[in-house]
Amino acid sequence: MLLLNRHPDHRQPLSEEDAATLGLAGADEAERFLAARDNHAETPLHALPALAAELGIDALHVKDEGKRLGLGSFKALGGAYAVMHLVLEEAGSRLCRAVDVADLHKPEVKAVAAQMTFACATDGNHGRSVAQGAGLVGARSVIFVHSGVSNERVAAIARFGAEIVRVAGDYDQSVREAARVAAERGWTVVSDTSWPGYERIPGLVMQGYTVIVRETLRRLPQPPTHVFLQAGVGGFAAAVAGHLAIMLGEDRPKAIVVEPTRAACVYETAKAGRPVTIAHSKPTVMAMLECYEPSLVAWRVLSRVGDAFMTVDEEDAVAVMNRLARPAGNDPAIVSGESGGAGLAGLIRAAGDNKMRAALGLDGNSRVLIINSEGATDPGRYAELVGMAPEEVAQARLPA
Ligand SMILES: Cc1ncc(COP(=O)(O)O)c(C=O)c1O
Image: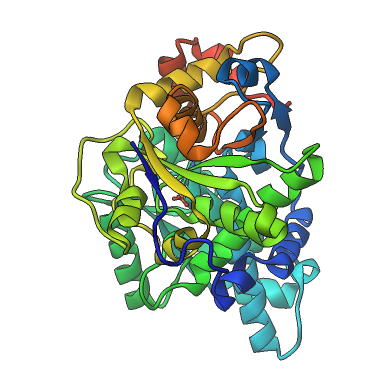
């Protein structure tokens, strides 16, 4: 299913506040904070000419976020960055002087951080980032996980010293429970989704993601004409499409938002023209995209810079994981977790359908950008879905 954006705000400039969140200064700060982290290497950008030829387009590039900060997903950029930012802000106000990222290890800043507790709900990846950020600055973290989060994913969060709270129900219920308990205890919620009255911190999380665009634009031989972006609550797609729009203006690529058919809250929101909560369906293999309510900030951005919204099926996601693991021609192999390749699944669907090709203007001149948003963040599940032995997965996960 493909829906073109017919919202009255489509192609309007971002609101002043969203432009500030996703603009140059914020992206600069996100990169500066990232550079201060130990394992901050830029992630690879791969060209896949064989797959591009097969899809009848000029070029296909995949930015591989599976290699980000040892956490296995782009989420490493958001939650941890917001935690660092908030600790510096609090330290600045308590110490009555400006403090910057270089001061994070000073005893007086550490003392402030030690009194702060950061909480969030997660499907897995965001919680890992918040826990890592809190560990980095010496703060406490409490991460709320719903019943569908695998034990392997929970263990990966707990490894950073986070306390884990299991919540009965789904992601949206865990978001509400995290907000409720945090309000009661005076903790700071670092959520990757936003709701009325709670926008600034999710905005910071999205600001962290803009690093992906910066690194990509520096490496690409020519700017892309299309970008296919997977969405859960929409924060990732909005950050990438929003920063691309700010950087490239009228020359920005068409942004196509891709979701699982079983959890297409952004698609339904675009159809309704306002944020909607969708009915629950069966769980999707694209577990990180299983969200039923869009982020308010994300929708505000996507209503302007999202050009089309589409869905992909369970088998599309699994097929992409296998295709990236065993590529055609000389294309590089890429480890892409269950949710990581949904954008590519969207491109493959669209490229194989004449009506969609025409609607999106996909042709032999198109240069498409895809972001593999996660590697094998749940190695057991990955091995099962691509038919690899666990030892092979361990090898495949080695940094490039
Ligand atoms: C691997 C991966 N890809 C994409 C997304 C979607 O991000 P968002 O929820 O901001 O739309 C997530 C969210 O957790 C994720 O973990």
